[in-house]
Image 1: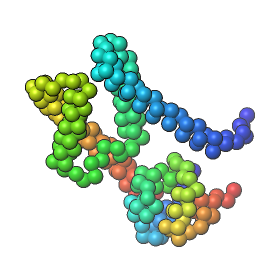
Image 2 (image 1 turned 180 degrees about the vertical axis):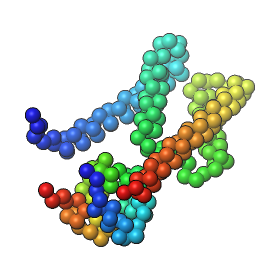
Image 3 (image 1 turned 30 degrees about the horizontal axis):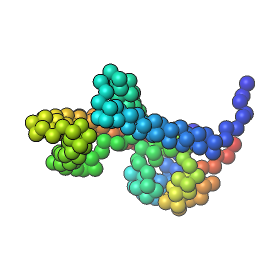
Image 4 (image 1 turned 90 degrees about the vertical axis):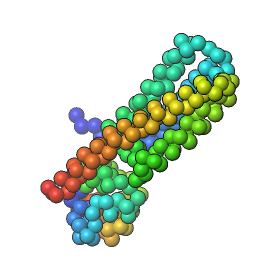
Length: 65
Length: 151
């Protein structure tokens, strides 16, 4: 499932995929794959992304059913 | 029927680590086996050919698998051809010293031809691999840009 919340949060923070990748210490490809829903990040990476974007895990990675 | 069985991700991760470590050990032992047979036992090539080709196969598999997954292992980090050549030259010197020591061959002519052959081959190989990798990374970059714009 695509992670649009993460993408929106990234754009709100005026960050490119490259900027976010640098901020959390991964490649741009990894950020692209997470946003496209093709890669399951570890909890540590999720937390790093949340910190970089100023969001909580709930904001970015929780889907209401 | 829906499969509700939960796979223990810790066990899966640990198994992968164990297998990966086992693979690294296997490759190291194969390399030692080839070196011992070639230089210490002076065995004919036919005796260690299987190990040699399995070792080569492992290397080729690694290169292809990394390439297919788009993992950037051939990125010279902005280094120019000069730096790549210098690195190959240093590798060549180390390799020729090891070759001379292990084989006991101290003839200048054969060592020189070994050195020139090594440096030429690896320099060309590295340039080709960097070129192929650059193309792949460019395609990935384009795909990411397109996805970023479309959504």
